[in-house]
Image (cartoon, rainbow, N blue to C red; front, side, top):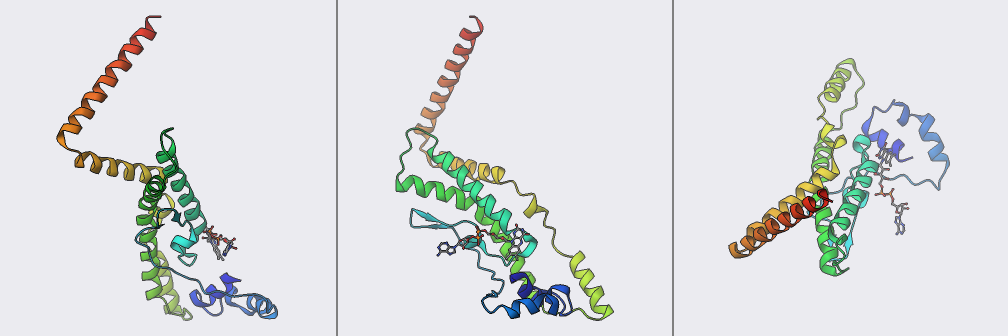
Length: 208
Ligand SMILES: Cc1cc2nc3c(=O)[nH]c(=O)nc-3n(C[C@H](O)[C@H](O)[C@H](O)COP(=O)(O)OP(=O)(O)OC[C@H]3O[C@@H](n4cnc5c(N)ncnc54)[C@H](O)[C@@H]3O)c2cc1C
């Protein structure tokens, strides 16, 4: 139903989806609601307070462009799962507001730039549309417009795990940078001690 409504905006009026054949049944069923294809704004982040976040269309409704909303919603869920795993996999991690907020922050930073880019593209395309392609010249213009569309490889081939790892690494790097030099030396001493313990253990195991 929604596709029908959308089609009348996006396609020529004689397009199959905008035709009487498809429209007539919707007009015969008064209980059918037709919704316009909503394109939301890119939110700066998706965390509300410390305990609420949003995924899927609620976070980035983009009017079904590129038929990607379903996979984006699944990618959001994957990123949220990775964030929970990152924060709560340690047995010492408590279910505190601070930790929940940290997980939501990781999730939001992983996904927000990706969907903001998509919303930017969709909005710029909406601003351009409005032409009804009926004559040959207009058809040529339509073909040119379709072939000149921005590549969607970045959207469809996006790796959520890689984006998530980049966010974690960036935040850890910033945190290390913020540590006083004394604390950094202590941490380096600790990790080299830990490495030498691991090597001792390996040698001991190999000699059994
Ligand atoms: C015509 C059309 C074609 C599409 N084609 C594609 C496609 O080919 N590929 C693709 O990837 N995506 C496609 N999409 C987009 C995709 O369907 C959506 O992006 C995706 O379903 C979003 O998932 P979601 O879980 O965020 O939201 P939804 O699937 O909308 O789920 C939200 C749920 O919340 C429920 N709800 C709402 N309010 C309340 C409330 N107050 N209390 C309790 N429950 C509530 C709703 O009933 C609904 O079940 C298409 C969308 C449309 C409309």
